[in-house]
Amino acid sequence: MFCWQCEWTKNGTGCQSLGNCGKTPQVAALSDLLLFTVKRLGGAAHLARTIGSVSEPIIRQVDRFLVKGLYATLSNVNFDPEKLSNLIDEAEDLRENLTKNPALSDLSTQPLMKGLSLLERIELGAKYPVNDLASLPLLSLRETTLYGLKGLAAYAYHAAKLGREDPGLYALVEHTLAKSLDPTLTTVDDWLKQALAVGEKNLLALELLDAAHTDTFGIPRPTSVKLGGLQGPAILVSGHDLKDLSQLIDQAKKLGVLVYTHGEALPAHGYPALKPGLAGHWGTGWQNQTKELAAFPGPIVFTTNCLQKPAESYRERVFVLSPVGWPGVKTIEDGQHLDFGAALKMALELGGFTQDQPQGEVTVGWGWSAVLSAAGQIKELVTSGRLRRFLLVGGCDGHGQGRAYYRDLVAQAPSDTVILTLGCGKFRFFDQKLGDLDGVPRLLDLGQCNDAFSAIKIALALAEVFNTPVNDLPLSLILSWHEQKACAILLSLLSLGIKNIRLGPTLPAFLHPDILNALVTGYDLKPTTTPEADLKAILV
Ligand code: SF4
View 1 (tube, rainbow, N blue to C red):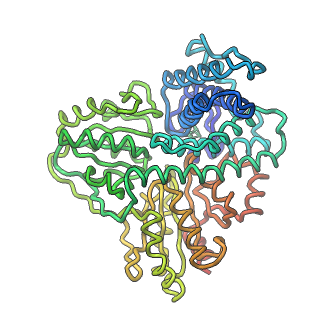
View 2: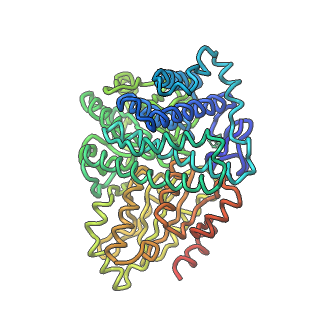
View 3: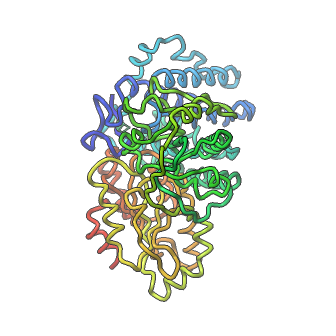
């Protein structure tokens, strides 16, 4: 196996015998094989769309699978060989169906994987890792683009579940997958354009998701959230999917089971339609789950990443939804109506918290609407010199000592700065009491990593308010990354021409030095250094 797609990659270079995340060589092979079948299917769909010979409903079915298949290969999502193999079958069936069309007769109609056993698939998949050309800038850019595409696919998957889709976005997915199999596209320029095109369309994916969330659950508003537990039967929801969460809330309410958010589900409390069904929040960043989930007295439902190997102490209490997988853990079947009955029955049997366990409160729900409603006050604070700079400190949390940087930087930020945050990176400082500037809190939680649209919309709106290019705003971006959704967001920021981003705690292993130099020269991309040095440079 070879995998270098996330920040946790072994020795900062690549996981080669066992993933730090728990990915085995077998799972890596099946994941690589799934990615290959998704590329083939995307290539066929791209041709079908170009020729215009296949009906929209058929292409739409393929597109929905493409984003689901890509999502299943994202870090910390699917570790289940059977599920990965089933997805490979699904991809091959869809391709077979597409290529029945006479206009696509040039494409092979013979599926490659049909009839192969799981072992044979693992052997075949072992031939598809990415290290075939590991030293080349071209490969580096191709991988960067594909990782960005995985992130885009995750956002598009959630938006589609709530009825928000876009043919142009799907066309870009198909086109990028087709390019990744085209040996004639061999220039760095081609892939640079494609990477930025993925970043640009990722903005649309984020906008669709924002609209899907706000149309369905209301516009987020600042809301206080209790940390800890309340006496009574309890169920914990981890992951990003708000539709799944809303169905669980409805079913739990009827049985008197209290629903708690974990990790990236925290911002759900800010939505008016979800807040009344939520009891509180339990836990911090995904990397702490082994300890935190063991201490939770009820079942745990993973709607999406980041899943780690469940410890024996709570393995029996874990339930996963598509696209998540871990061998042997209970799966809640996909569909329009999700049945959480077994998980809720377990919650009642376990009884939950025997007494209240209060652990403080935090405020969430500072989406773009809430922040921009204070735009006039913000302008006054900036022009009067009382607000020196916004620091957007957000992204993924993860393992490693280097991530203390983000907590320390926020703690050391002077009192005339406002911290905007999003993603699970905020768990390094989300409970710090930073006070306010004339009523504007100094710590504003914009939401999940899936809410990056809010941050971008706020930056673009403030540029209008101050009548200045976005790069001249009193705003610094200090980002932390772990998985591929962060790659998508970085490409989106670059596609907008946003410069001077600080990225850490380490730079991606898959960025070849030549590509890194191009990003440093063209976009002033910087690695994080120390909180003291970076704050000094930012606040000159
Ligand atoms: S996803 Fe990250 S930790 Fe897991 S195998 Fe790949 S690089 Fe390693």
